[in-house]
Length: 484
Image (tube, rainbow, N blue to C red; front, side, top):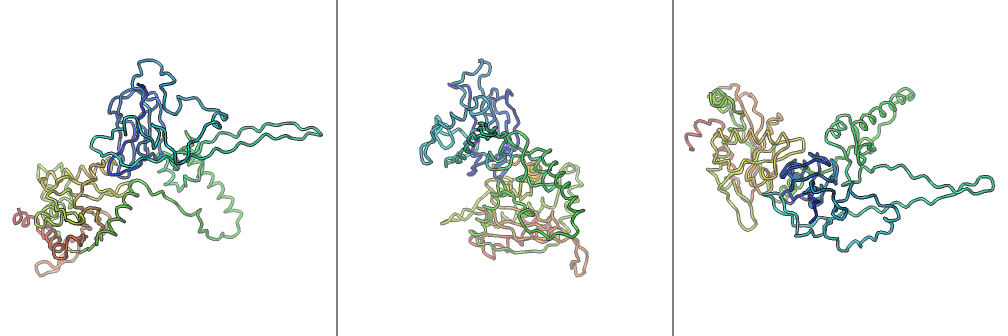
């Protein structure tokens, strides 16, 4: 049995087919333990640290940071018994630094299998010994095989030519071209670490236009800074020598092309599917929330709540959970020939992160006390901002709140997450003139926007649900006494 084991990129669940390697947490030669995090991978939903399946010594890393890898592709090789001495050549199965570089003649003699032929076991698209590699605990296996990208045909070498000197022909052998790494050799993407990408974005540098000087042709900070210095040096003489201002350019040199992948790609697919599948209806309600804001102030003043993060979103979430109890049909899913009404509420909270919009949810939120709900909201937001939300935390949502008020927006017409029948937009709380007890007074006011699936929720049910949320926010103490 081979000591060298290749670890494949596991299926992280929910049909994900690929991931981008953000950072390697180990290097070749490191001795690692079982379940030690070895790589951080960004999937279509979140950044996830993947643990090692075996203890041992890292022998090879097959893909650099910044590359996109398909599920089931080997990403690292581990020697599971490094104390047993040197590894025999026959047991080294990983392609990488452990194998000698083949010559051009040996490469030319290799027979390439037909495009539709069988793939050898152990390779991408083939059958691994004993079936597919086990996935992480709690995640489902991928049901479709990974497809291997076709290799680019080798560039033909230039034949030797002769140079005529006088009346004699002197053969001259062409010097080999300097070896340049192709920065698009892995996954078709520009290789650059996240800090380098951020620097390029801040300085307005297009990474696709640079030639990397780092490992495997990756772009480094120095490459980005040289590009900025070069463009500045070229621009200064042009400004001095050009007597007139050149005509504006509207070509590709003034366009930025952003690859659609990861969280953004999944969000686009989900929103498109939901918008053209579920018939959306949106209703709005403007509410005087002055008493809610005063209740929050009193809550913050309590000794046992002083270390708790209290925000208006907490009472909005409580209002939604109580309204669901009064109108359970709102918390349901359209399943073709039936409607599935759920007795639990996995309350989703839309969160904007650096990787895009994600919607983690609080499992069975209706069973939580107000204090437990506050702690759950705080943990959810902090985890999302840190980019550590797991795929499990973003699956199974039943009803969602999107807090557009944090951006200074009054309200919106949110699109339903797939599988849900209602989503509430919570707008900014503003001090506005409001008629209160027969007089116009400054009051704290907000606007709610409720989108719902009209196949399940008709106008009456949607209106009553939204009205109950508004009644709670207008007078939370009275609503709690009346409904609980």
